[in-house]
Image (cartoon, rainbow, N blue to C red; front, side, top):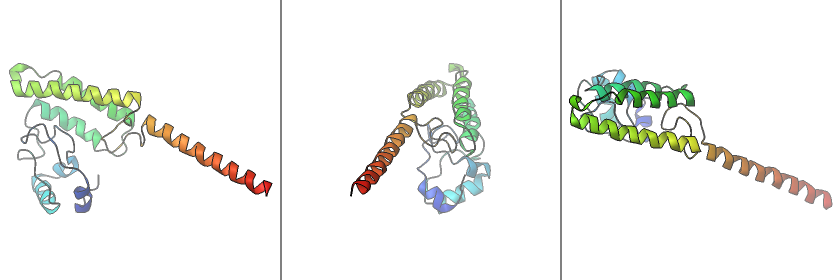
Length: 171
């Protein structure tokens, strides 16, 4: 992942489940966090971005955050296949499914909400609305819907080319 200030500025903000979490939530600057708290803080400040989480920023704060850290490692890999990203999604759901109310009511409720969110994401990928492995650095480059649209556009270009050649042959 590109850790330049310009690249960080272009990415959206980290949207963690609460302001305490280091990994649980979309947009986690995983690579920056893995370089240590000082690196993460300096990069966020220089990029004009909000620092999110609890110091040390490379350590999960609870079981849910720990599951998310493992998940984020795959999401941060630009070479991860769509299948690997989807497996990470399901593994994350399995991991947070083990969180009990005795771990904390808020953590349990957030785990239930995260499970529902990933159910929706995986369903949208399955029907082709989202690209497989969406929201990750890796995964498919286009959704099934996008691929079909591209084929229609390509077909239009081919048809246009044939028509142009036919017109030239007539005149």
